[in-house]
Length: 134
Picture 1 (spheres, rainbow, N blue to C red):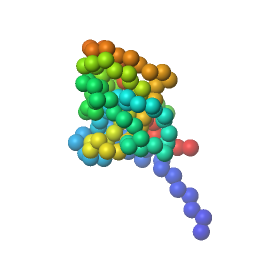
Picture 2: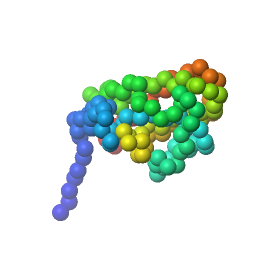
Picture 3: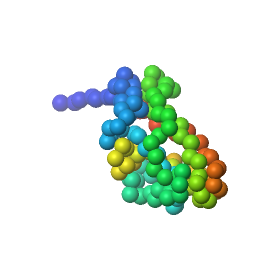
Picture 4: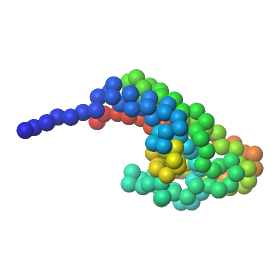
């Protein structure tokens, strides 16, 4: 028997809203951290493949703003904005979004070049995860 399956746009919209709004859940996108070692964005990578920054202000933290937004259809995108204010000199190579437990990676962004920061410098991160068919 031939079958055809699809996650429809409405279903994707509901998943995105859940991912963006379920605060305190161990499985929701809730935390963000800067990355301090070599970074390569690969779909097969996981939380253990990246080293979080340990410098104050760049460590794992609750995401500042997380919402569902619309690109191709209603609520198809998780939209994250978060400011990091360095407490010490550091080199930042990327950032990652993780679950509430801080042990599962949802998405990673590796920067084209290192960002050097000094104490009190601020990096404001905008990150989007878009759900789509096809």
